[in-house]
Length: 422
Image (cartoon, rainbow, N blue to C red; front, top):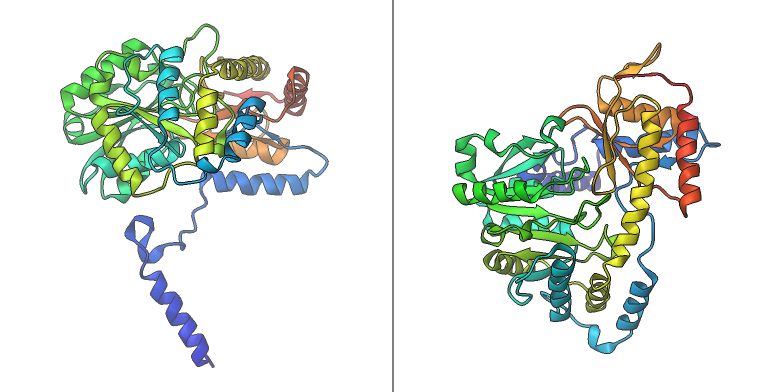
């Protein structure tokens, strides 16, 4: 027999369950039994480690740097954290950081004429900035255009606000650039936001000034705001110069660019970046941000300003990733992959095999990724949004060039004499 206490507990749980917002599932929140991609990877890693305890996991799926931030930047953080004047709320940021960000855009990307007071504001990383920007523009029924495969945060919050998302596929045939002319006229007319990300996650693709000029023309024609997410912008290789959307004439008239120190300066956990570009958009974002957070710790902003004034830090990081890309590309191609070294980011995006000769069949990239984890203890990230592809990351744990070669040699050893079918 159910006791009164049990009845009360049951009623309380039912009451809470009915209060969840529709945007996260409403009364069905937490009841979804679907297992999402990254959770499947996490579970497969745990199962494979238990089944193969003698084998070390090679994680080629991690999307963050494997190294610490530069020691001089860490020292600057320590020094600034010890100062009592840096202890308080930062609100929408300190001018020192904004000025350093403006100089960084000029020195690294050739973007001149950015007003640090009106056209730059700090963010607690790019992810919160992407989450907040829809609050500046999206009303119920409005539309944002996203690229897939890609990073979904801006689209997620567009939906939270009652908006809609239109997806444009990034395909190899189109150099992993969105085909703007393929966007239906009625979609372009309704859209308020266009999300771009170059160098791209997950494809590693870079873009050109010519493409950005097309984007500006398209955005002006359809009155669409451009949000260019550029956390990998300075991580480029083999003569490819870092490119900013803001370097294109007219870009400031239609949009903003989001920069982050996470990838380019090995400062993921520091949570510091900035939004730059159109003054009206920057102001609107600042107003929304002011109602969401009280700013990043001033000592972090001052250490980040110091880092931004030293682009050679990023150049050294990029040299490491370039070296690793070459090792991994050459290794994969020995097994029949058609991998090409990307010109930017730390991601390598390749077509997944369809199976193994005389063995398993892979109906999707996820099937292949799961096979690598379960049988070879090699972790990757599958993408089946626009064809079956797998994302490898060159941020695997390795201290120095010799260890990097050892990791790649171990990958080759584990794949052994497998004959993949493509």
